[in-house]
Length: 271
Image (cartoon, rainbow, N blue to C red; front, side, top):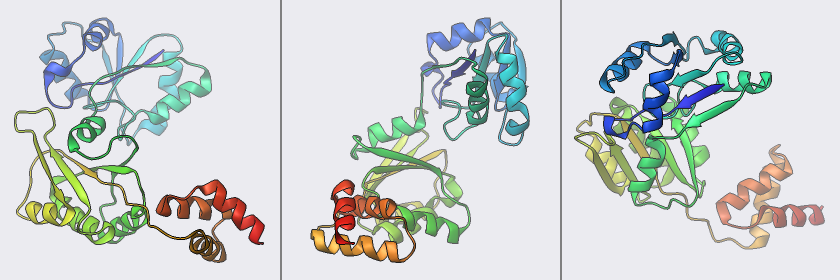
């Protein structure tokens, strides 16, 4: 089988007993960075030295089938540098190949920067969406943020410290300067910090430079109050632009808090 094993995101004490037990017995480990995995084994005091196979963004398409076939005959432990494999890390292609071949896939739960940042952000946790890293180029980043401006769920992003100030500024421009957010830095490490405020305040704070691994959590959009007639008009405007009816209804529903199904039925009745 394939065993996706979550590793500490900072504090080594977060390594689970199951993780240690599996690594003590593992024969083969697919690792995002074999050097990082070697250091983890040493830090955890694990005497076992499994065969390490590199599995990263640049070779996963080539390695996925080979490793899935290997996992059909022996257990294969999969590790990313930190957190859960496949979540903004390599592993999805391997899991897809394993599922296609009928190979069992399981996981050892553990640390996750995504849910850790969400939990301590002070923002709504009932519904959220993880967006990973935004595009590096400013124009592409702004386009991606514009598409998320009406998203009502709490949004979670990873970002490099060198781009943090620019990204927060773009978020303030796309989402509104008063939208609440939290920047979580160096989670579970000695210098962990959570800075909360509006996007404008956070952009100003980050302008002087921020170090460390960053997670940004942003409050979802507040639904606009519109009449059913106006919402239906927005749906029709989107349809006129070439958007499929169901997609148009879903987009307007997300922005207004109205029910997508009711908008769809009303749009059909109006034809």
